[in-house]
Image (cartoon, rainbow, N blue to C red; front, side, top):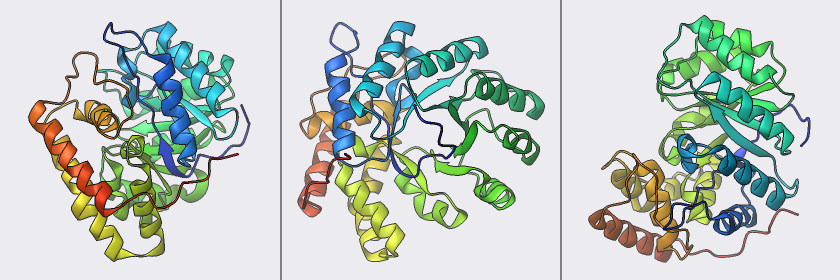
Length: 311
């Protein structure tokens, strides 16, 4: 754990929760997933978050996932955990994260409860102040931050970042232009590569990358091209990779999770396709479409040179 009060930047890795056929956490597969993300140069690891089916995890599974991520990364990159939902559970998981050596946590919205802005501010503030870890607050679903809410959270030194999963660009403009570099700004939209071209001009300098679990070099090429203003490459990757995957992801609810596992299986990362209810596995028709998309993507954008693992 470090006390660097700064949100991670760049491409953020979100390992999945691999489950066996008996619905048990496959710890070996998780460790390999985290190691692969490290080897592929991702700038931070966010473990036991939405991509890892956070709401379905038991306390012991959560503890194991945090321990594995901290152990495998070995301090090379920051490790953030997912907390949120029930306030009491969130406080407990925040303390577990601190005890296990994480660097921070991503605070998800309260579950099924839509509070007033004052209540939302108090919720995020209470969790953030409960430990000395860095905190990133996440607006999505039933939470939309007002300027007054972020003014409250700006007074909490542990709060280092704001993650957006709403896609309200007028709101994002107001927030980023009001608070500037007081917060790090993270794009947390589903398949964030789709929207990153619109987010960069606002000051967003990092994003959650689901596809980095199975085609990390393409996500890296895409982001580098965005940063360098290489619009031809950006459009090429959009047309042949990002939009086709996005179109499949939109076919069924829950594909934001199960499609990651399918993609990993297709490229030879054996994590299984087992997901926990209410999420369902990718349907055969969509799995076949994903196979075709990834074959074409890898043919068109081969992995040219290995990314040097973070030392």
